[in-house]
Length: 133
Image (cartoon, rainbow, N blue to C red; front, side, top):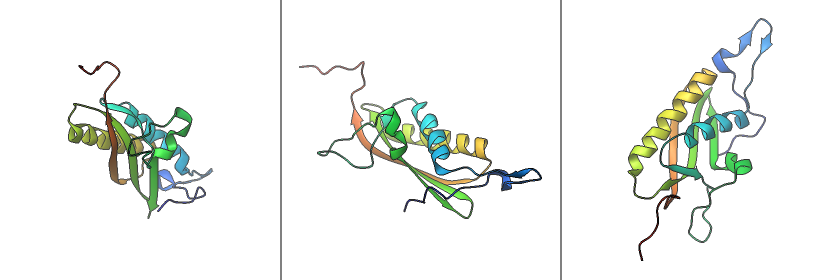
């Protein structure tokens, strides 16, 4: 279930004498995308939908489509769709993404992240790898 764009969270309880702070899901998407792409072994943010059974790496302007945010009781659940480099340990990369995203979002927003779910849409040979014929 995707939250409407008008949904927002209020970091660090959001109440200040000068007004209130709200963070829309699009800002959370950006934090999650940057933290994910910084992880070793991630080749790109992928579409949640496969094309002809293959992962589709999203262009930079479309990357937010590969991240889904759910806000429930001021807590976040984040689903991220990725394409990883073939030949590396998938579980290790996924745990690194989980940790990086959770840390970045909590640090920047001060709001607890309850779950970061990683969906590996495909494994792709990295740019430096060539197939032997």
